[in-house]
Image (cartoon, rainbow, N blue to C red):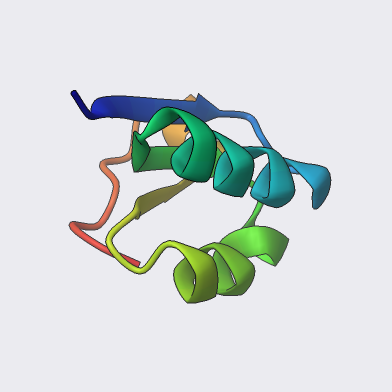
Length: 68
């Protein structure tokens, strides 16, 4: 069974490695990521199907784009 996961305020680089490990070892599927804009490109490269929401926009109640 695949587990869909939301990563909220995971704005440090190490979260990318943690997420990859969860995907590989536990069959997680990242589906939504709330974080700082600086990680957006790295997230897109590693998890191309991930929906990214810039944390300041999320805090302001602005909708996330459909994909990164």
